[in-house]
Length: 297
Length: 331
Image 1: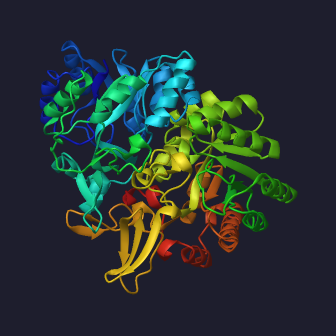
Image 2: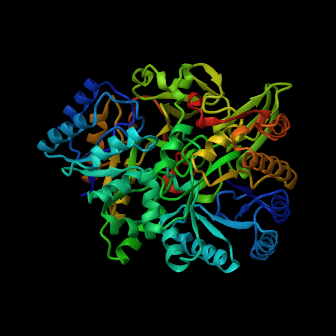
Image 3: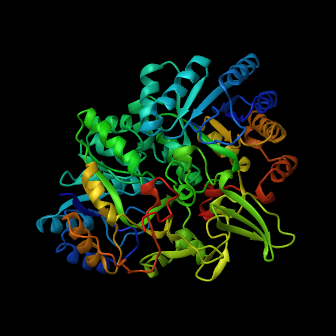
């Protein structure tokens, strides 16, 4: 049976909200939980040591825990926090940029790669496997055809590298040094007043025809539609996907996990679309189409 | 500091060389490079002529093979590296780890430059590429402030090249999927951002509209000058305000920073724009050559000549330039 994972929280939530969320998640049927701040270095409601304490608590509840690193590393302070995660030796690390690869390899920490890592072919996976790669996420812009070829080629090479697929949530699409939330409020990034806290699921960016295009979330830009591959789970299982990643949202996540758990156990996909934060669904990337498209009806 | 100029065609290459480029960079006529435009770039014969011309004038030629091959494209991308090697380029600009490894093993004598698409923003990331693929140089993404560039440069194990002038990409390059989200092509997969095939212009009662795969990117009133609908430079609605929510149409111009960049030990400044005309290349290359020569002659008294500034502003998107992320306040 495929594993279910909870990806790192992409939004900025208060410390209490984060603790409350994971207190509930400890009871959900997810196998792996990724912890850490992956978007903005100014988001420090939880310090690296707070994340590590939380990781221990969740491990005690029987979860596999992985520490996720910041996606855009810009400063020495970012590197210090990265090293704290890579030098603990207790938990696996999800490397989200090449700085993390280097530090993890140097510390001989087993690592997996997140969906922002530039992995497009088997040659790249082989190089990383030699360095200690234990598993990898498909970049969000790639679909089932490429994934199928990669899994086949890995098998031919005799490499056991479990593949994980971002399967539910708003897709992380870009990272900038500019903060778009601060820009919206006409605030400098260095004095942003932490306005992201007011937007626990980001800010909608629409076209002037009200089409939901993107979600602004600090320095990151996410999809305006919610990626939902629930109905593709049987195919993923046939292809040999190891883990199905669900991206945290602050409401209704228990219900999302429950439905994905049913489906991975061979239950029938619920025909009622999930309506949490209102957003259109999309699955285009999976079918090799523009990401915003919804192919399966 | 070296001046590295873009060449999207043989005439552009010759123009860049004639106007003072120390090196030019080019790509093949397919999606193996990050400027895949119809009618642009080089076949082998043209590339060979360009290399011969550049070498005869003392300039070098770099070949960009800086998109990410998927399994079905692996042989094609690998053969692009082979072609670059047999043409005798002076360096190959690569992003993909698999291709870097291939080039390092098969052609260890040809210098490898890490493309901006390799997403290396710290000296740790640069060390990863240096240790594994022995890169000689890296092009830094346009997301770092001058202080951050200083931090990277201080500990960098490789030569650094930074963007000096041209279109401003404000997302960390190599991991921006906005274009493939709205269309089916991205810089990483096809070497295209907001591809021309998906662009549509339409005159409507409300104004001139630019669309990308039917998505309204911008709408221009009478008298407003319209720009190419690069998706991050459109006007969008965020909580009821319509504005350039991501970035204005503006070009990067770092000429004011040249003395700082020199002090930091930056090896080369890069001009963006393989899609630009030879006339554009001539003006930009000439202006930057003059500036760099001025910097060399009087490093302590360097000032930007107003004429240079005018020339560059006239060649910029919307006539506007910014130093972008180099200035912390821009963020």
